[in-house]
Image 1 (cartoon, rainbow, N blue to C red):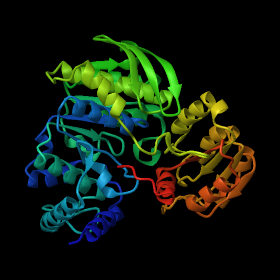
Image 2: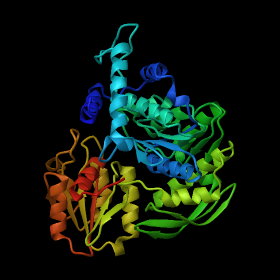
Image 3: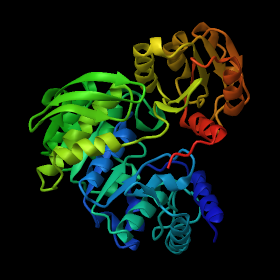
Image 4: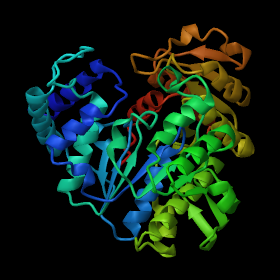
Length: 440
């Protein structure tokens, strides 16, 4: 098996769709010797910000000297980005070997077809996400990581990552998303996110309102202590720039002055506080971290494709906002820095199952020109079908793909202007490929 054959096999498992349940992944991990129990972990869920928060927690652990695994999804450019140890993506050769092993194991122990009622002695074949989750845990065990940071894929309660019993559970925030799977209302979705709360395990959350009440109630029922960052911490953004920000922060254990983070946007300040609260919860369990490692980790943490400036003159800014809550955070950032951005040219490509109209209602009025395009994904929305876009956007044009959209934007942009590519991580990834920008 080659790496190409391995990834083709893995992506081919997407035909099984999402399976909300743990029986299959639990059996798979049992057959592998339960690698998910090999190292202490942090489990990070939520709607937006969970990837950034996971990256920050991972960077803090690494700065403190822990050999750290990080499992996130989706990837931007290459599958190997999903599974990292000390920041380094898993090697293609390891993906190939692990895929071959997992493929044989699945052939021997699971049904090979997504049938609703498999034989009693066989569970359904693992999905793409179940198999990649198992791959991550095996890789971390073989690499002898001292800690693993694991991001939830979808929801929480029935997500494949929920097999882990972490040292700390994190729920960043909750907004409406994946309603066909998670529920129609905010409390219903919050209840699914709260599924990662384990008995007696500390919970860190930045949720608010109805969502926080669900998290708090669930934690109380499971006798899990809760740290609500808005209650436990106070912080102020002292300096905010396109490339990062400086915070002043006071919490129950320390005061941090001049805390620098390299991720832009005030929503990332909230994610940074969530990461600090997580680190301090780990310290209370005996992890030797310390203020210096927390500072160094936050300063070094990177999360490509999120308010990511990739070139200048004109500035090209990429952001993976793909739902109204993400668009709201992006719009707040744009409004704050509007005077430094020049003319703003929006290149927008979205998946058809997203609330694109709510997103454009937030972003369109801030742009001087909007270019609608088609993300390179089966679920990508045809830009011609975004028929009400001109209600929110001025000077609307259409490009057949993000590459053409970028070229059109650059042809009309002046050196002092800003081109913003957003709407989907697929759109952002296509822009990265067009610009040939490495992400490490």
